[in-house]
Image (cartoon, rainbow, N blue to C red; front, side):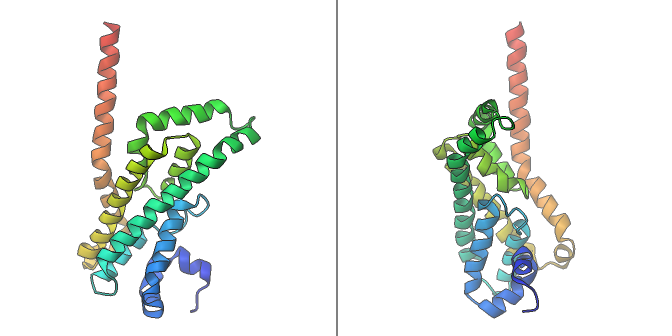
Length: 218
């Protein structure tokens, strides 16, 4: 290969066709590792996520990969990645706050915990569709001591929705010329559509809180 290893992983969505031809079935393991790392390590938000899933689905449509295997395998990678990120935040979060008390006050940790207990479910799901932020969200959830059972419920739901949307989106629409030539625009549209229910629910809850506050004042 003419590209280095770092370039290969960072731009795997572009090299995927070549990877399949060179590594065959091992490509599934490579995809698993990248999706796991993109969501599981705080220091690797630069790895491809949405674009890689969509590209994998597109190549599955021309029988270079099995779309159902991809869905199951990469959903597992996404869920396990988020879980490991959460556990790192949970195990090391208190120590980090104790080590740097001048910069990271205990009240911040308590505030984070309260936020995730109240809004954590929708936050975990929504951030799945926001590049870079999705890499940090599970770590913050762990730092804030959001219960693992609650986190896992929404982690699984978000992981399934994320992989399902992009893998099968690529499978059914990725080879359409307009989609191939305007992938970035299509990705933004997909993300906006996927976030619409969460946005509606957010504004509904905000409206209910406002009404409750107004009733308390009466």
